[in-house]
Length: 400
Image 1 (cartoon, helix red, strand yellow):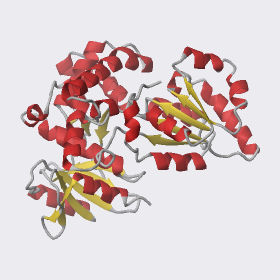
Image 2 (tube, rainbow, N blue to C red; image 1 turned 90 degrees about the vertical axis):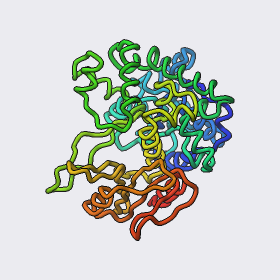
Image 3 (tube, rainbow, N blue to C red; image 1 turned 120 degrees about the horizontal axis):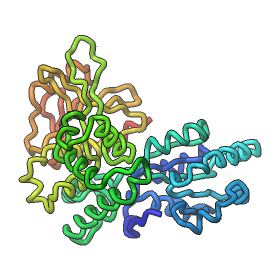
Image 4 (cartoon, one colour; image 1 turned 30 degrees about the horizontal axis):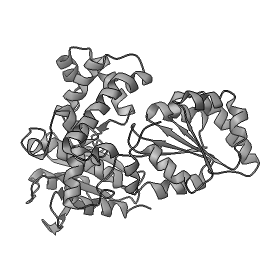
């Protein structure tokens, strides 16, 4: 069971109504996210309004209750069963399929199981093989700027500390940093070995730190491998693992504009800005603002915030041509609109000429520059500067 801070329940998670709605529609819902992100807290909040049974699959006692899983779970008719850390017991999934199919024949079609997991593709692959058509999948990200209140102080604190509840809500900056350092150590030494072949913790720490230094850069696996003294295949497997654990994002390049010489390599980001700063030993705002990673850190932070607020099924990419035309984030919304977003740290944001050229190439429906100020204002007749929380609200309002 992930040990979420009790105080995290004071912050209303925007995913709660969506999760409630999904459980009213689907027999099973998988809620995915890194450890300590708040999945268990959210599940308990949901369970408070329902007749629910919680089972922690890392607990020997709860695992013992599932020695005969079909018999035990079959007795829980009418209850929502919450299975935490489901990746620890993949053999349960065929059992769940049988229970779901039987319940459907009896007219019970929704709200049977809530599965909590700390990995992405690993769980998706299992559920796709055994629960296809029976499961809805949601991702819980760390706290975002809207959940934290949306004012400038909250955004600055969220950027520095990241959105993991115990880090963001820590009493002091040193306490927040210690929590993140312990989180990294625990992941490297205990959690990551659960998901694949044994990887030396120190080698993976150096690799993760290299990615933090390279925040927002183009992914060059061969270059990373050379710097770490490993082969390219191994470096690629490290990237894949961190992506699967929802700790790193590969942002794909936009590749559908025929006739343009486009950059094809993805960009790579450590998804939580607080982990970036912990990996680089950045202790406070002063150290952050004077660090070479400040631009990449802010860009990655903004992109994660926007993707957390964007409607489901939104497609995200970046656009860059060999001649320098570039857009930091291209969002293809479910409504069919295409938004171009540039990220700037300046309080007087002015996009480069290449941004406007790229927007014309893309035929972008709307053009934005996200900046750390407090008010939205027009930059040109077609481009608007927008504070991060306001941009998040705009995206959230586009949900269909």
